[in-house]
Length: 91
Image (cartoon, rainbow, N blue to C red):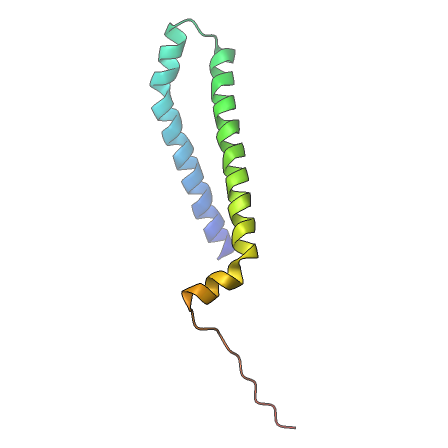
């Protein structure tokens, strides 16, 4: 089951990257016609990717810590029923 989940996730990541490359081809062509070198175009996309990855990691980390520290109060606020396990032991 885990292998299937990883396979589906990998397929989604690869297809998303292929779509991004196809969308960016026209932008790369415009930058090259304006006289930018391959290294400059690569640097632009590397900085853009790294900055969005860093922002996503920071925001995700902060939201995860915030959720983890306030999970009990959030569950109390939502008034979700608790899972109670009753064990009947007869000695």
